[in-house]
Length: 394
Ligand code: ATP
Ligand code: ZN
Image 1 (tube, rainbow, N blue to C red):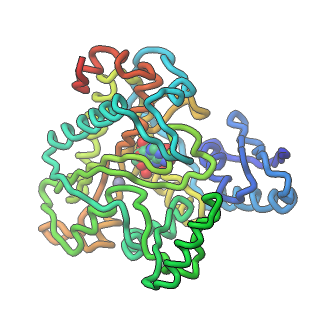
Image 2: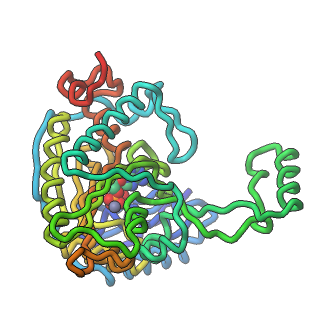
Image 3: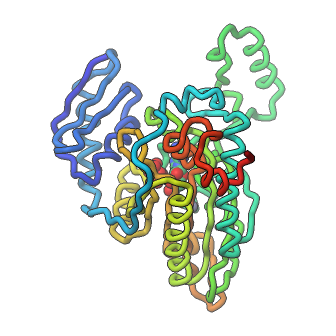
């Protein structure tokens, strides 16, 4: 392993995303650190076999292109509240809990106590949904390429996607693979060859709300009060080397409340959601703040989109203090999409205008992780008020 230090000016608002995004430049980058104070350099630890000169060139031109295609902005904090100081458990203590089973990179299983806690956190989201009259939907965990192309996800966030395929209907190919696995000594020898598999046509969903727009393809929603849908389930994002702990998983659980209607109606619901979710987390005993933000970027088109989001205040995140490098963790986001998805899916309001859409997305594993570090790795020891709110049994 060797360390490369690249002198390059990185604007403050891009430092975190550059530090996390640089991994997608090359598989030989194993660690990255941007000087967060001054932003005058990035250090990357790279595997010995990497050619430092060409890697430096790749990283430098990626950073320069990122800076060129982004707009400068200053994040605004629209709400902030306190709570108890410090953390009750370290992330190591949390990860060491007998209730957490690491089943592969970014894959976790929770035991009964944490499953009950997670279910209870989802229950709070359900109550919020009921409070705003949301209608529940059941959605698949897989999305077609055609669908994600319509959402423009493939162009903007390809680095996060996981592609799904399967064998062709071909006895020879299927039987040969079965034989390959029978003879395999290690799992690596069971990787199927692409000869026998179909071209990729599907992906694992990276978020919940995309399916909701597809359900309303060509449809109409009320203009007066938005139509509100809610749904939850596993979402999948390939986070490369950023997947080190509970806070950034490959397979994680999301709950979304999705609004479709007039611009004002969708915006008002977002304001209400910011208020209600902040209050909810405060009552759970978690300190936090709500700040303007952006989606992660890697390719040039997504940098533009991300900075546009920030400039237009399209995305807010609710962050809780967390013992990671950022010092906080986004546990929920409040997003406006303007008429982007509705025009892609021809969704109109009953007065004929193209609808606006917005969503509130909760990272359920992250809310759980925040509870574990703030109140203790064992939910039995959480404050009585939090346990009561979650209706966890005595
Ligand atoms: P981040 O900037 O932290 O990667 P994001 O802006 O990509 O988050 P959204 O697309 O708004 O996140 O997703 C909604 C919520 O889902 C986030 O606020 C977070 O709580 C959760 N989430 C997103 N990615 C992950 C992940 N890899 N593991 C666990 N939870 C996640
Ligand atoms: Zn969404």
